Length: 460
Ligand code: AMP
Image 1 (cartoon, rainbow, N blue to C red):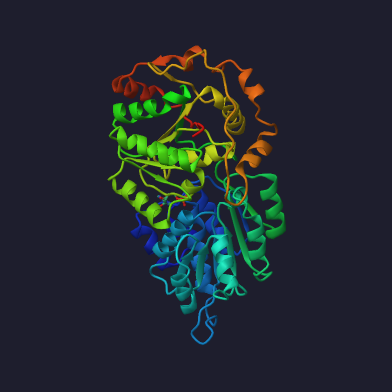
Image 2 (image 1 turned 90 degrees about the horizontal axis):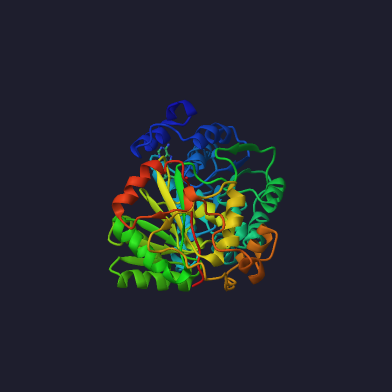
């Protein structure tokens, strides 16, 4: 089915073909006609499915259709508001708005925290049709009377599950109170918790449900694997995997900001160019690290969950979970960074004995066992017993540790961990040692088509 059959106006079709897309992705096929009809949408979409174009294209078209007479003495009002959980995702959505809307006379801007508020105010004063924002900075701007949301016609909540995980629900409710009752609302979420369902009941009017991938399942094109390894040998194994396989672009997840910094320093000492990206870094430093990673001048980007959400990096074949996430849903988001837009991807997790409960939560969520593959020379020491994982200090909004405990429905205690023998789940097929050579590794790739790969976590 070509893009032209979706009923998009010529300027949008042109922008899409200039971007190089010829066929709409499944979510675009479903969402675009419904949004053009004015329907509210509840979209269950994995990252990498093309959902941004799925809502941006029809949003632009609807603004063009309703645009006449809206300018008040030449001043534009915000008519479409897109809320995102992170600065990176906001910047990315704003880029998409510019790309797809480049042949249309609509103005847009993006606002997020961590950078000076004044340039954002200046842009808003000039007037925009489309505003992409993170909730906190948007409320700051509302507080300073720099933005009026009373004429919003279309609201998009992108990665709504993440916004709730990050504790933005009160901010979101404050923003909602500033919007007109009559509007079109589009809610996208990779996962559907009770809280998301409740929010959608409150917000959406007879929504069309769109689901392009099964809920809480991992992206199909991503193969996943667990490499069991002792915690103190994870860094060594990571350097070995990167070096022996000559990986050029690897996104690595740690659980803490400190852990991200430390790992990136250690990798640099090992001769592997790396940088860290997390919430304590300035926006400038984050943008710089990301662009160096995209251009290939650094090979490894070490990120925390929050910093990595929303990153859109073309050609990202490898994601490594150096530590498993506290929240099982984050595993799905992490590995969704690879295998995007039809490309294949590998997600591997370095898992130590302390993390077996987290692994169990993840496997329960994705409803499959992730193959285990012990790398020869890095076999876990069976004498090492599980220790309790360190508590995450979460100074930001929300508390992921609590969410993790809630989502697993039980407390992770030292007792429950240490009672478990190390890597009980390994079987002969999946748990056998692998030769320490890149040759044997690449030889295995062909046969690992159906294997799934995954991620790991380790206390910093
Ligand atoms: P998203 O899920 O919106 O983050 O998009 C994931 C990636 O898919 C981005 O790199 C988009 O540029 C790309 N993409 C979106 N729509 C299409 C399409 N119809 N054909 C090919 N690539 C696309």
